[in-house]
Image (cartoon, rainbow, N blue to C red; front, side, top):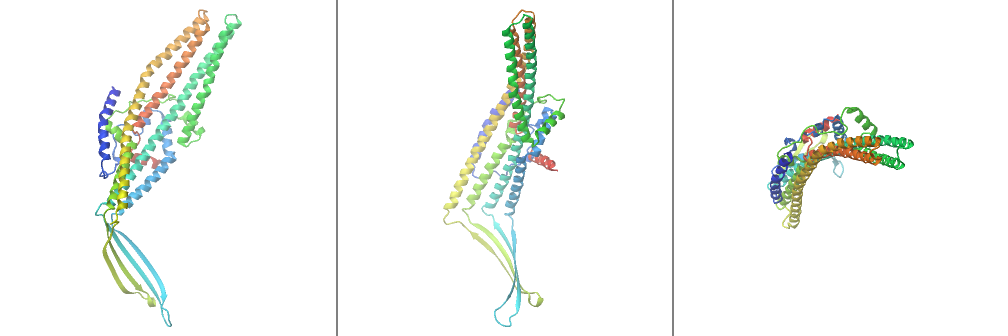
Length: 473
């Protein structure tokens, strides 16, 4: 039922998304206002989705990764810079003042000339009358650039959180598979010893002994590969959390000693309106903000076809300082407009418009592709998750049947009713069944993490900023 509902929403939203993309690609000016991620808290997924697994180790590792990631720190600095640029773009719309001051000590050439001190102070007030919207478009572009950077940091947080969850699941999954292999190897070692005893008593055969030893050694040979996979997962966790490997091992061993080795989802996956899923994703929101920025820059380039009109006002004071006294000799002022225009040769301006238009169309195409990618990734992640869920029941039954088969095969061999080949086959089947079940448990968790990742499940900009500021204290 969940799959049918989810897919129905996907396909019903495709027409809407395509129409939205085509409409945006045809625009020549930016949307009225940039996105504001802090005000869009669609109830599609918990921002801290890792709490849905009720695994304290997983939560601790992900939050450590978010706190200590240097890419996130660099992204935060970039946001601060773009916030300043956005403020500057807003200031350009207001009157600005500047002041120059000069002090000069001089004496005219000739005899008996006195030394005079001159002080000049010149305040200047200027304001550009934004009659053709150049400055307003530049401010919109700056705000869209800020929004794009904000969404880029959110997307980075989504990636870091999911990569940490996947790496931890891979580490725990490899540990479980190693234990399965070691238990199988111990069982097979007992079988080797049993066959050796039977052979000494004249009941077994050398062929049975060699088969038992071969299977035992083959199982042992699989363990180093699993240990390498576990070590690689630990290396990835160390890079993501910026923690030494030994500290990670202590954290895993002490934080959740009573937890299941592989984290399991304890709450149902979220189900909500498809548009909310797609609108939440930071990569889609970033692509939309970039489209708005390029459209606004096109408006900036288009305004270059028209004159720039400014109003300037300055006050000129000249103060003489003879005999340690201050006298105002002159006081003047000047007010008037200033007009500058790139014409009549506007070929360069029109070329800049063409460049901006092409980049806006490119951004529209990228936004459309981002929406389609979001639809594809979300659908694929949920399909994989549901497929692994369906497999689990059969795999659990296969493990139980394999254990019963091994017990029966061992009993019949001990009674002399079957040869040892039946026991070996039952052992191989049990090992394969238990390993497939462990792989399935790993896949269920990892595909669930992928679903949350493709839903854009992480904090809003305000929540993420608050968390990172708290981490810095």
